[in-house]
Length: 301
Ligand SMILES: [Zn+2]
Image (cartoon, rainbow, N blue to C red; front, side, top):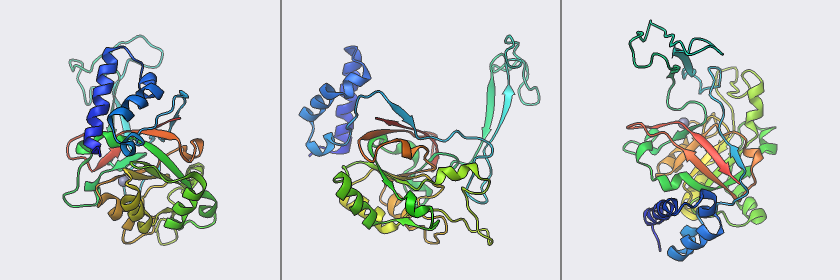
């Protein structure tokens, strides 16, 4: 058996050596690269990085805007220019908002924006520390877990008529009957079709008259199953919470983050990737003591 850490070292070593040899990344993770990995590692871990080489990359990330929906009560994302190049299409004159940066500031002559947001905004990572006292923070999570096979479980038909529906163990069993066993070290994503609601004001958060949000999420038993029986690296959702939004016990968060796995919320474009076969790359945040943060998530087909 190869531990994930050993596997990561193997992969890092191969990548470094391949760079020296001038190999392109596609070559590295193509058949020859995987054969090399397979020769060095046990089959279980070799299956954890089945990168295909079609060259298609799908962005699973929403563009973060000031009006992107946030969890009720959280502040919106905010952005303001603190230094500009002097206006669109102009020559760089180094114009600067002197209310925040003086002309002598090193930023003068360059365009710079100031961003203000809570960590759990937009398409973002939940680290174990988001919910679990003493849990791992984002910057110390194993980077090998940020490159993983991605499995998409589609519950959109049910979610269209039941905003409180959850992804269950039965859904996972159905998925496996259709597509085969969920690979080890996978990111398992719930596709509820919720992003179509971004076009309707208030549709994504979907508050009821009492201000309680309603949106699909994972059932905690399903997360327990994925952790214990399928050894996932994490779960993802196309909604604002790993749990169904009106959950009071946050059981899916506890099951996932309590097991040291990560979550990704507000994923985009899950309908554009196959149920299995793509590899996800999570550009996770790396600020100190991060409970999570906006991330760029890509699927390689
Ligand atoms: Zn979060």
